[in-house]
Length: 252
Ligand SMILES: Nc1ncnc2c1ncn2[C@@H]1O[C@H](COP(=O)(O)OP(=O)(O)OP(=O)(O)O)[C@@H](O)[C@H]1O
Ligand SMILES: [Mg+2]
Image (cartoon, rainbow, N blue to C red; front, side):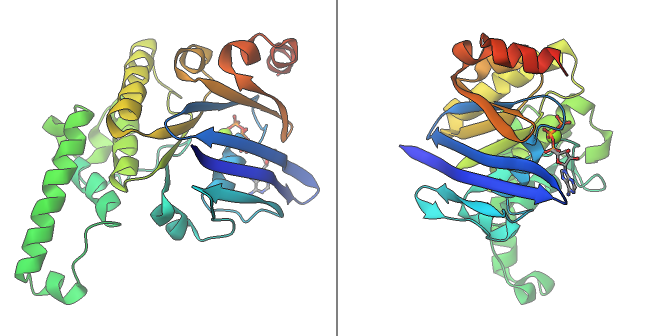
């Protein structure tokens, strides 16, 4: 079943076509990679998919529903969550509270219930704490639940970002260079985590990545962007052996 369908997505900044006629179809449960040299337009695709930018042209459908042009918050509610190329955690909040921030899509109490600490507030807070701890356990971060996010080592901050994104219960998870800045051990662990998230949460994942070991290790299909345009797309093994792709990378 198709989860995400994107047709003819295009955006220009000034005279630059940062993304030009971008098309992709991602099936439910797929682990899909978006690769390409620096400045190719990969993060801009994520910004278009999550409503940070409105496309000049094109259509984005999630489970058949047109979500083109919706606001970021509404796109998140409709089922797309992301992490960022430069980690964006709430650094002054605890690890637990970072995950709880992602849970607010699904757990509600009114302002009055919150201020007056009415029974509903305690009930919802208790449920949120339990759910957040479950997610932290998945990422082996439960022992650090009370730490400030800024005090976690880099690799764990990356994991916490994924946990927070999953707290919004997305259908599609977008990861922007999740292995950036990681050492080989951390990258290996991250690969296991991503596979686990796909299997355990029945998640569909689109990831941008420069680490070819990670890309070839976990992605089933790839789209290669170069200068805002699709160079090629298809099965990972075929794409990575495509001479055009090798040239695009060597010419970087
Ligand atoms: N808000 C913006 N205003 C102007 N130009 C932009 C904007 N956002 C992106 N660009 C330009 O669009 C192009 C694509 O940028 P993008 O960040 O999507 O590349 P990328 O493939 O993610 O690269 P990297 O691998 O370095 O992260 C670049 O030339 C960039 O300078
Ligand atoms: Mg980028």
